[in-house]
Length: 431
Image 1: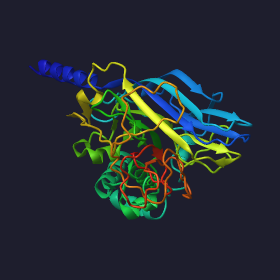
Image 2: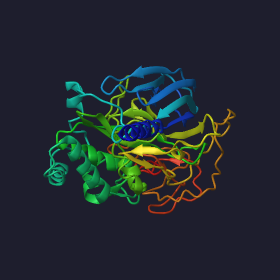
Image 3: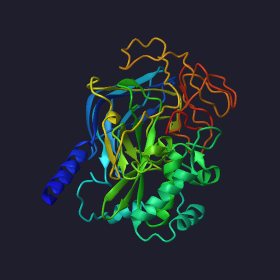
Image 4: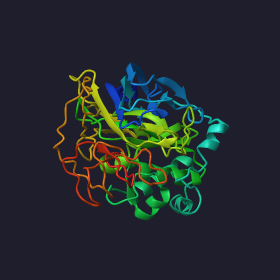
């Protein structure tokens, strides 16, 4: 009888482990640099997705109006594309990379976790992921909060869980007003709201203040209930290091939006995502003339050494086998509990406008009418449609907003014709 029970438990464990999901899809990363002044030096950088332990990436095609070169920065290991022209012609510049991606669900805790021996972190990496970033201090208020919420805990895993629970219960996923989307920890502490960038920056600051290495990762979300479509904006998440389990994934903003998955997203990432880069305060390769980037998920362009923010974006995906259910339709294992992720909510439908005179084939994925209501608020100012504006924010790059041209502060941006940066740099459509 005991033998049968043990065999039954073993088979159950193997069955649960095999439920770990994958998602196979193509991803289109496209953009247009608009209104390039003639005869001036133009430089363009944009992140390149690459293979790692949790995703297999193949480049199906890469095209650009300037010659593309693959480069690599050594601090975080990010890969990127780079293009330049010493005397650009006065025109728009188009770029597009199409990827084939197989993304794996990532499970580190619970019944289906992989067997891991004691894992060592290189001293260089330990120092990197324990130090502060420009907007992520590890002293002062976040350190005081971390000391309070981890009082009585003795292990890194228990401390990390206490910090995760604090961010989950204290923060509110809310993209109204200004200041959110930068990953500014002091703003998050004060406002207690924001998007994925703010949630995970607070978690990272508090973890590092307790001596727990933590890192920032960014890419794009895929809708769990759709097989193709346009992607409205980025998504980011975090890992922390724990000696017995290695790098442990967390996604607190997704847990907040799907509260039944609170336990699942402590120690797991679903397969409905693709990663493009990691780290904050980034120097590109070759180095940009401007300041370090807050984070790197959208293109960065300089004209004569100054940022050129007039860039329109077009991201889309399509499952390779649309006949199969999306990754979330398969039972997941999280912290030893079977769960079924629901729809990953999108804050608004994606809208884009093709440049005039552009006769190139459209990116794959269903077309989206420009008359669809974005149901988003612009934070400030007159925003030229079909353009990206960085404004005067000290770290504006990476903050996307859908806005109608000439939208006034606090007004609803209906029928938005194209992507645009709001001058505040806040990131609608991300998180």
